[in-house]
Image (tube, rainbow, N blue to C red; front, top):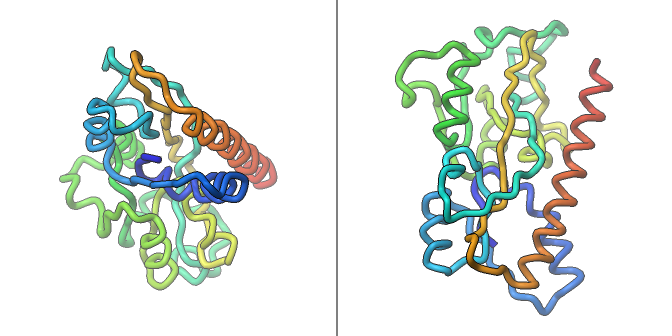
Length: 219
């Protein structure tokens, strides 16, 4: 099953459920850049892939099914100097004084992010660490002063174990994922792939409800 970062982390419960209910199904997970997945899709080596859709919407050969949007926020360890003994909300300028980390943002998402923080410099200078493995980002941020960006669901292990906390900003970033399921218009997907997507849709809807409930509690 092919996905891009950071969606790969979100599929852990989906794959677990599929493997539990259908143990005879062989599962291969491919996590890579959407351009690589598109080449495989066009070669009919894939039934579908899941990725940010904004750079694909003009491709007339593709059918794109949008998935629920997940807000992108920033996280750090509980003992981080930014938040230790500081109950008030922080400005993005305060956050920017520390090393920043993220997965490789698609161009459209990066442009939105740079605009939201009023960053006009070289893209290569923005991130101290750019890594497509969200678990690696999570572990690094839990051990030093790196601030990481992404949907909370991508860092759910660190948050659950209280190794990471969300940084409360006085001005929200107003950024979100734009994931979608991408098919070839002239090709049917397999029954196994349909089952996988059914589980994936349900999981993402569940994650969105949890995030919405947490946001309401904060208010």
